[in-house]
Image 1 (tube, helix red, strand yellow):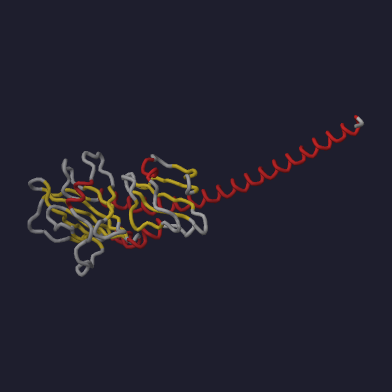
Image 2 (cartoon, helix red, strand yellow):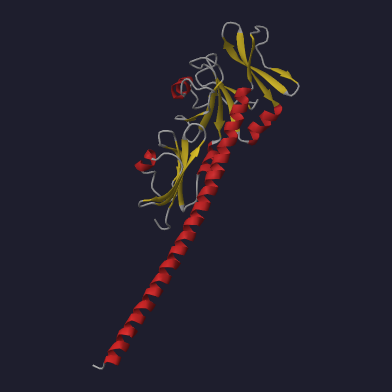
Length: 280
C-alpha cells in the first residue's frame, strides 16, 4: 500500500477518535452539570424545609424558656391559693418549694396571646398536681379534661440530671401518638419536682415535619428512633445507619438517594429528609 494513503488513513482514524472523545467528554460534562444542578436544587429544597422545621421548634423552645424564666419564688401565703390578676399579668401559684416558699408564674397577657398564636398549650406538672398535670393556658380548660401524655414519672426519668442552666427537654407522648411535649424544670432541686410543659399541636407539627411525595421526612429522637407521625412519602423508613450518624450531614444515601440530617432543638433531636424517585 502506498505510504501517503496509509498515513492519511491513520490520521483520519486518529481524527475520528479525537472527535469521538470530544463528543463523549462533552456529553459527560453536560450530564455532570445537569446532575449538579439537580443536586443543588434538591439541597436548596431540603435546606428550606429544614429551616422551616427548625424555626417552628426554636420559636416554641424560646417561648418555654421565657415562661420558665418568669417563674419566681415568693413567700408562701395560705390565704391566697387562687390565681391573682394584676394589670395584664396573671400570678399563677404552682406549688410549694422548701419550707415557706412557693413557685409563682408571672404570665403576661401578651404571652398568652403568643401561646394561642403558636398553637401550643401550657401545662404545670408538680407534686401537688395529678399524674397528668394541670392546664395553665388557655384559661378556658375546665372542659378539656386532664392533659394526655404528660406524666411526672416520665418527665423525671427522661430529664438529664444536673443541667445548669436547665435545658428544654423533648418527649414524644406514648399515649397520644404525634403529640410532642417540650418541658423544662422550674425548681432548683437536684431532682426536679416542678416542670412547665408545652403541648404542641400534633397536626401542625406533622405538617411542618412532613414532605411531599418525592421526599421521605421524619423527626428522629435523641436515640435515633423516628417519632410518629412520620411522613415517608413513597420511601422506606430510616435505615439503621441514620442512628449512627452524628451532627448535620448532607450527601448520598446508598440505595436511597440524597439525604439531609439536621439537628433540631436543645435535646439532640434531628430532622431527616431523603429524596425518593418517582414511581418507587
